[in-house]
Amino acid sequence: MVFRVSAFPYRWVVLALALVMFLATTACQAQTASGTPPAPARGAETTPTPVQMRVVTDFAGRQVAVPARIERVVTIGSLPVVNSFVFAMGHGNKIVSGLLPRFDSQRYKYHFVFGPRIAESPIMEGPDYTPNIEEILRADPDVILTMQQAVIQPLEERGLPVIFLAWREPEDIRRVIRLLGEVFGETERAEAYLAYFDEAVERVRQRVADLPPEERVRVLYIDPQTMANTHLITEWWIEAAGGVSVTKAIHVSESVSVTLEQVLAWDPDVIVVRTKEDAEVLRRER
Image 1 (cartoon, rainbow, N blue to C red):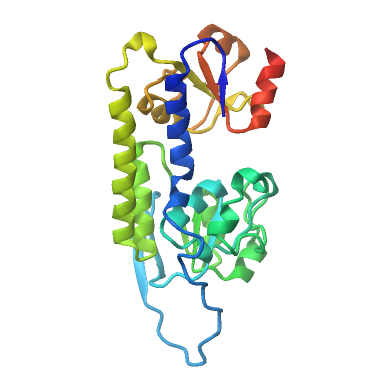
Image 2: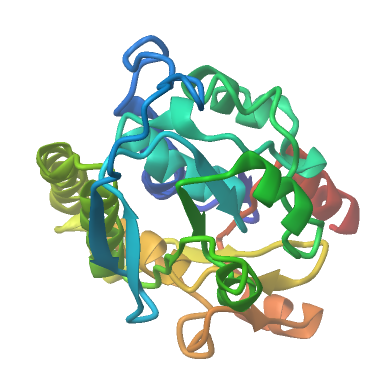
């Protein structure tokens, strides 16, 4: 959600928001609700057959062996983001982990469309991303996808295949998509998605290429509840959309915290927040 701070021209704010929403949600557009048949039930075969495996390298440089045919996926961490990448591969119906209560809102309703098993699946982690080992073992996943590096060891110790994902720059997005293309045996689909991704980003780039510096909005992306920006990639979102991030000089690691005094000194033209509730917090503080 965009919160206007000044009377600065609004047209480029729309582009900034559009790109943020594009990165957060376009993965969902790559799959239709009925585009993938339901996953077969476990134990349907009476005669065991050798399981074909493939080995992939994750973002921690670890080689992980996963079945060539993935039927059950558990996601841990920033669930809406990780789930959306699975949706982009056309395998949302394989997700067997539920959303945390904080994600159970209208904003995330399409997760239950693209991932029809999510609504009835147990939650596999705590509010601090601590994995629920018992529930995960009960789910018997073929692969676990996570953005939380700390959960790898306890899951690996129990023989569970864990793939670590991370993204801070645009090229990381491409690596994630190609990695998941390998995991799900969807390399052609991955390349098609990346072609769409590049075309969308280029379309925005052309729209803002000739925008003079004095017309580029100065943008702050923040969680007003914590006064932090926990996503380094937002610096790219803002710049690619034709804006100027006021936190660029200090945002060198994944998370950066700011003070109210810094915000007042920056005097951004636009503040971008995630929810309507966050926007209400800012309005009350004006």
